[in-house]
Length: 452
Image (cartoon, rainbow, N blue to C red; front, side, top):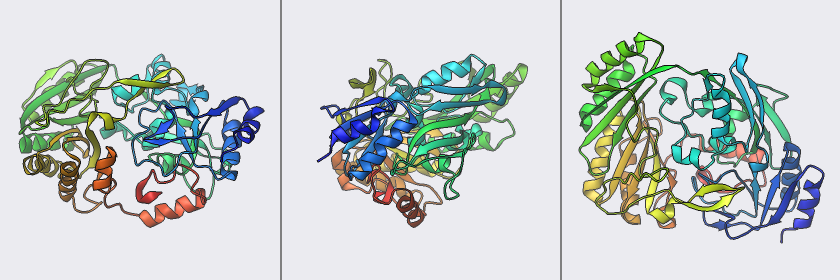
């Protein structure tokens, strides 16, 4: 039985609060016992030290927009609410660096640096931005959007981080370095680890100047043609900022959209050249699906993928975290969200595999993402058919080197029917790191690949 009094005593001198968990304090269906909301890194360390001493399993939570990504934790005795750490610590505009605490909403960070004509190029899905997605959540899920093609993913943009390990040890690495731990680049190591190795309390990011002029080129055609044209653009000397493919469920046709950024007339000239490559049209704004995850709608403007199963989707608000609307788990919407990676040439095979799986298993699969090989898939169908369809997509890239398909969000039934992670390289090394940083498995046990 958790001793909330001892948790509160540990936190008292550092600010923050501890309370019993309520009905909304659930991590992907796993109810918590208590919630701690520290207001400082010292408070996070004190709470974690006491929670681990009591043998509690702790799961970090920001705005909760992706709390149901990854696998459900084996236990969630304590939810560590990071929204009390919501300060923008430093904006070094001259150095193109920003330092922020884990609980700061990404939208607030973007608004601040925009004042200096700078940006953090992460392109989070609008649904997560609207829901208040935090810096810590951004790192925990490792999410990034269309412009990762040229600027890299969030792992490439994080310069350093201060983290708290399960035993309360504070450590920093990378930019704004204080000291390092065991030689690991903790900032990159914790990115995409779903809070299973440590709790990020502060992070430093590389910024980019905003490029004032932009143009989009949009074209469409049969799946193989679109994949080939998109590949030609990626491999060209036209330096596209993003090349995105959107293939609606049930369709033999896909759309490709290319973003050109820069200054002056050069943008228009490059856009004209891209239009010649893809057979498309130049336009000022992006297509409606740009940067969205497939199978969701945002801000009340519904975009329902035309799947034959008749399952509609929507983003709705349910509960709240620190006054921030929380996105409902997709489990209630009947859509399985997966992340699919492929080689540059393997994207065409992935598109074809999606169409084949629909015809074989009576499912709908909407695919969307960068032509360089990081896409998301929204799968609708029965749990059994969804599992078969995910397996079919994985067969398009039979080894981790050629690509992976990882289930991010799914119902219990789908998770029971299939290994959510699929084949993963380096699992023994990942488990060894977990044993070193969290030997008692007190941080989000079971949320990551291989039961980490």
